Structures are given as C-alpha cells and as structure tokens.
Length: 164
Image 1 (tube, rainbow, N blue to C red):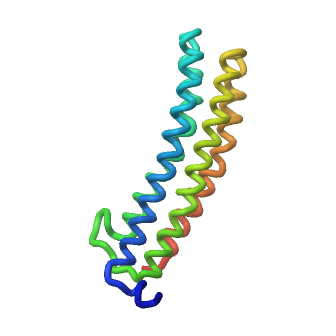
Image 2 (cartoon, rainbow, N blue to C red):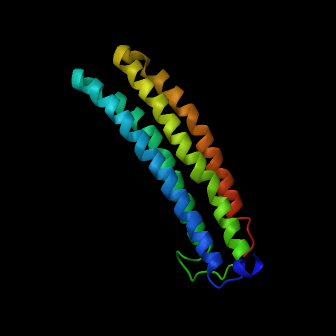
Image 3 (cartoon, rainbow, N blue to C red):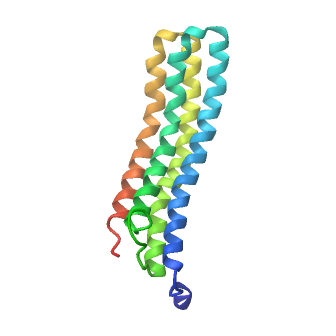
C-alpha cells in the first residue's frame, strides 16, 4: 500500500478527485431538488401567476448546496495550486487527506439539497393554499441549509489545515 501511495502524481489526482466530488455531488443534489421544486411551483403558477415570485424563492433555496460544492472545489484546487499557480507535489497521503476534506461538502451537500428541496416543495404547497404564510415555508426550507453551511465550514477548515 505504501508503494501505491508513493506513485508520482497520485496525490494530486486524489486531491482533484476530491474537488470533483464536492462540485459534482452537491451540484447533482441541487439540480434534482431545484427541478422537483420547480415542478411543484409550475403547478401553482399555472393556476395563479401572481404567486411566481413567492414560489421562485422556494425553488432557489436548494440551489445553494451546488454553489457551496463549487466553492469547496475552487478553494481546494486553489490550495493545491491547480488554479492560480503550479500544482503542488502531493504525497498519496496528502492527496487522500484533500479528498477526505472535500467529502463533508460532497455528501452533506447532496443529501441536504434533496431534503431542502422536499421542504421547499412543501412550502410551495403552503403558498398555493395560503400565500400570506409563504414566509413560514421559506423558514422551514431554510432550516435545512444549516447543515450544508456546517459541511462547507468543516471542508474549508480541513482544506486549509492540511500541510503541503
């Protein structure tokens, strides 16, 4: 195993895979969630077009995880020199550490986007029946955001505390 981790270029490869995972999984989760909230919102808007701005806010909420995943990927790629410099010569262990540092955002980003999408779709239902209570639907969906923000924070802290 030690010989495998010493292979030239393997460390940078692991680190790049981590960046890809953060952007990919958080982005997929956001895309799925924004899509099914959009489906619910389209039904409401087809009946009452004046509710468009209210349901649009709910549709946008689960898109933030994709942005957090992208931010994580950019910070990781910048830290290892792939963006804005020359790539660092990472050991296999260092590369694995960067990969692991990206996983909180990748995994939590995916699942929190889906869960936030479900909460936001329920908020669309609130808006359809009682538009004056739209804010309550937004708050319920926004609560899920807390976990995406915590995952973003831990990924950033890990990325910037790995010695190169």
